[in-house]
Length: 319
Ligand code: TXA
Ligand code: MG
Image (cartoon, rainbow, N blue to C red; front, side):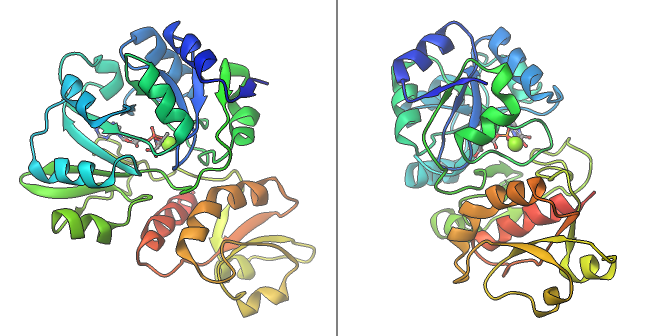
């Protein structure tokens, strides 16, 4: 059990001593430490049981601070950041030597963002160093969208959880970079691709669904609940007498689901993708903790935030 509260000065004091504090953001909660301290950064990897080859995102409080840690090498990324920050966008920029190699896992690029959450923005503004913060979940598990999620899984390993309530967006930030002149999205997230294209022009999707983390972004087993996740029809096919299924729904209930006893969490009864994003990880957790033997779902419409939700579902099904 960690201390949970809204005391920014207390959080800042711990971070200055290179201790870890969980912070709320609009996307998911982060496990934060002083990004300029190798000791703090190493303890983030340790607490999360995260492999050292998976680099961390740097969180800053103002766009002017970016120049101390990285170079704006492409005008489109700057335009995006100016339009979206604070918000669910992470940009990959050439790093400066001020950033420990441990943060970027040896890469020449560093990931940066300004989160849109009042408490955390205030915290960042009182600190004179950036915060390195991965999502505050054990490696490979579903990201936390409230302080209780963090406490349950990492409470014993962190000094304080800054409580900002429920995350408004509920999906991790969208990661964007440039490769051979092309604007690339490496992770779908809380900022829709269509919004990026409107601001910065066409993008190439570089979504790595292999077990190879060399390409920035993702491992295929990310975001997985402990229970297996199937498409509805697959789940129905393997149901045995007495089976209770967990059903992650969206809009109107899949008709065939009536054939098997089930527990339903509906991401958005009205079919709203924003609402569905905000509920996704919480409902996956609730189903994971329920009496259901396994979980079934269907892909959502593959547009807007639906693309990022489907990406998370696909990865969670890759068991
Ligand atoms: O919304 C978010 O981005 C949340 C909140 C806490 O800010 N953070 C988050 O961090 O999702 P994490 O560590 O769970 O995911 C960060 C992803 C990783 O998959 C990592 O591979 C990629 O960002 N990444 C970080 N630094 C990178 C770099 N230098 N080059 C390529 N990919 C990088
Ligand atoms: Mg994560």
